[in-house]
Length: 427
Ligand code: SAH
Ligand code: SF4
Image (tube, rainbow, N blue to C red; front, side, top):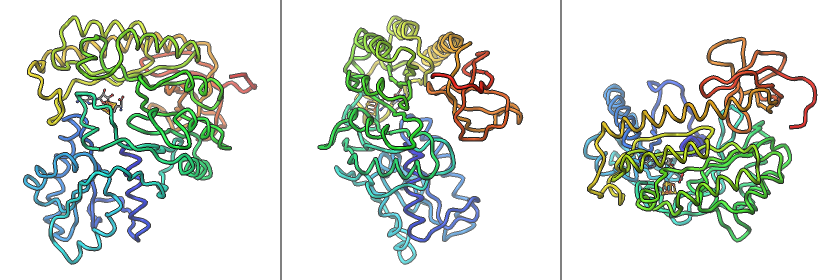
């Protein structure tokens, strides 16, 4: 989401006559697009801002700005602790940037705008995308789910959807610019709702755009996945056989305290239903360990669900208390050493579960888009499967962006290895 927002901001500034420079020391203005999801993300931004102080000392005219969720969330802290920050803009105020830069030349006051909007979706602004395979397209902003651990509903405001027509134009533009893969983005991508249609309607329309090789979406909320969505995925070859399905926790008690709105049983049934509609569908997830009040028994239930579903991959986090959220007020916070040891146990289990899922692919022929040179060898390419798994293989006469068939020969860690198959195969 932040990559997309940074692309938006960069487009806005380019349209107003500014150009991007590669070296910070050459810049007249530096904007940091920020994230508040966990304390660690905020620490990273604070460290970078501290480094910028020296740049400002060398160039007093340099404008330093903080954009996005931290601007929204911590404006007073930032103004107090980092007086060298000139501009603070929340996620709904990016349109003001060119005007603010112009104004700033005559006015040296701090500029703060963190008003949240019920309407802003940056409808008419197609971002300049960097080279690559995948084009992110934001289809909605904000979130109304209010999971008790999460800061997003506070920093990004109320949920609002773009119009289907605008998303389709942006998809056509991305295809014309050479992008093979489209990823539809939203905090709750599948609660997308407009007078023209809902998420399954949108997905169908994007998949029908000529030249779209692959469509993905992230992140759906389990509560909003229905039969229609699964049927649309089944009906369209170019919608990737992959669902990112955030579980967060396995115990009903913790799920309830998190306000996730589904039980363990409902989640397991959903995973089963997904595989009924889409037999080889890759399922990935997000897990939080050490949520307030999580007992060893609760944690074991999370491990159990992971074993039962057999997720292909997972993003795993220690709970990070976010001031202002409901869970931050719970008095039964879990000590750091317990969170750390649960995280390590979880990672160890998921490593094995991913390996088992990947080993099942050995012998299969998978469609891969050639994406970049492998990190380990200049003689090999790396590309992703429909299930979003990296595959490494020897270079032949293919180029980056080609869609090819790879026969999987090995699985190590979270990576697959294979060799190119030249004859036509049914995928
Ligand atoms: N809207 C998405 C999640 C966006 S945030 C969804 O509902 O799935 C991405 C992930 O960050 C979440 O799925 C969650 O696992 C994690 N996360 C969010 N708040 C967190 C917190 N306070 N501490 C630790 N992890 C958190
Ligand atoms: Fe946060 Fe996602 Fe829950 Fe919304 S649905 S509150 S973004 S975790």
